[in-house]
Image 1 (cartoon, protein in one colour):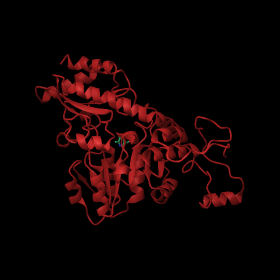
Image 2: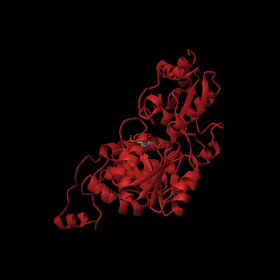
Image 3: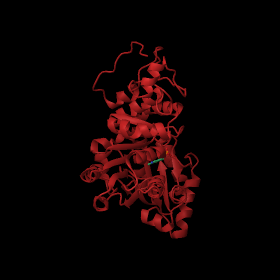
Image 4: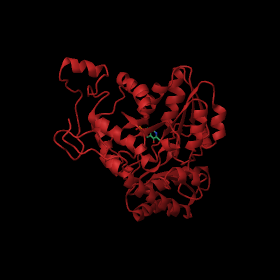
Length: 405
Ligand SMILES: *Cc1c(COP(=O)(O)O)cnc(C)c1O
């Protein structure tokens, strides 16, 4: 299949791998990676087909588990995370599903941060409980809680950092030590930072979980996901399940994410810069009570975040709008959201278009008031996922509501 293509030299930097890492070009020498929009691949003869189906010879078979475009996306993501292998999934949640199906069986136990993505809590805590998998949910930031939750049947620790929407940061290295001392694995959802800012494997994580829907695509076009891990884990624990369970990413969506990763580093840099400027400005605003952003010195885990996240806070920040009483809390937050004329009011993040949301009535709307209170998500909280618009336009957009409270 090669077109006499130059082979990539060893030791390339991540910026280079982000635009160059892919499977071999076709015989046509396309410069932009090809989109192989095909459900299956023809076999030269029956003997070859038999060897390929038996796994004795490399070769594409059927796009539920092998496709060159998807393979390029997996190769590029693995390179960015500094890991051997990756496996693409149809969504971020199907990546968590594949992770749990691949590593757990009835009678096993999972320790998970109580501040991870809501659907992850539901999948591990409710759905997998039906199949006999136990789980304990613990503090995002207190390593002692994680240690205390370990049991003899603990097989997996699951963390996400920073969290949505309050940007609490957990110590990946410390959690990896807790996991490994217990003979368990650590999985980290790296959706918020992306590999451009944070590579959990560097700090001892065994599996990195991704929602490709967010920063990897980066322009709000497709739903996608992936797991990144050692070649042994991917080939031994995840590929067989993908082949039988089929939570596969479509080649088209894989191609969109593949091209998105080419600009990931510069987007993360520029969007983090805007988020830091917004957070700094909001912290000094008379109508703002508190700002949650790892890039601010006032953030409780600022130093840990800077060490773990390449000195960047990421693109998501939240803030409490000042309010006289409980009734005014929700009203004032809604006023700030609804006064914007530029920002998108939508349930997503990781887009180049800035997104503004009211977590207590949307992403965290199904929690009880008590659960929300425990999680620190109050009615006056507003979340902003900074995009690429000019910083002055973003400030003006937030000022429309803040200045008229
Ligand atoms: C969005 C998100 C997910 C789920 O990803 P989907 O692609 O929507 O399935 C998982 N974890 C985090 C942190 C997310 O933000």
